[in-house]
Image (cartoon, rainbow over all chains, first blue to last red; front, side, top):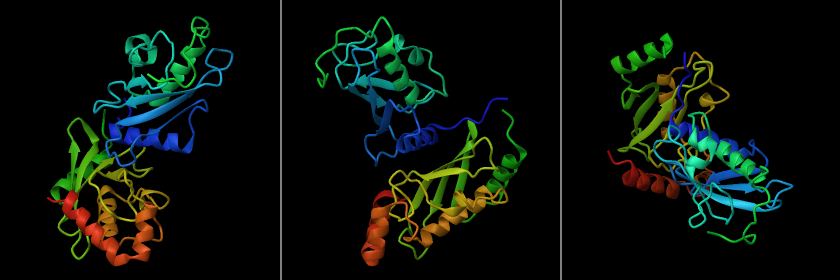
Length: 140
Length: 149
């Protein structure tokens, strides 16, 4: 028997509350862009670059958009801060969903936090952690 | 997924014996998820408005309370900008003996009796205490603007 399916808006409220209380991963955070947006579509996330990598001590901002179909469909994610990663389009900052496993194999129970944590992990994997990075603080 | 008997019973009764001024209709593809509308009570600043809400019965309902929020913008000290409601029976005072019906009636009653001493929307509550006629006027304006039937 499958579990009760939490509808989009209540799922996003749960994520919002978790984000507001800081209950999630310490190295990532996210919040609603507009506190009056009853549909809770647009969010900003931050990722603290992982240690022992070119990203150490950097803080990256990303824009997250949750469509009407979220969480049936994954959110779309775009870096605001410039970053050099294989899954990030170097012109627009958009994260290529086919190149980030949690987006490519999206599941209903995944959250925005999953995406942020996985982006952070991808910064620290051996093939990415020494990639040359644009100046700190530059934006797309 | 099999829906617990309790939820089926409650839904049947909501349809067969609706509460005056309240409608609750389950989504066809998710019978735990309801579209709700509540008419603003007479003699309240919400009179004449029809407010849309959404309600969800979590997996462990009725051991945990329903989740519910306003979708229509409303100026009320116990309802925040995202439509979340501060109401004791939705939190600490929930009991499995309560039902969807009783919760919706409590929310309707909350519209008739705002409680600025237990606020969720602090700015609204403060105004309610300092300038009640002004706050009521704003609540009326918002009702006309956002909750016109």
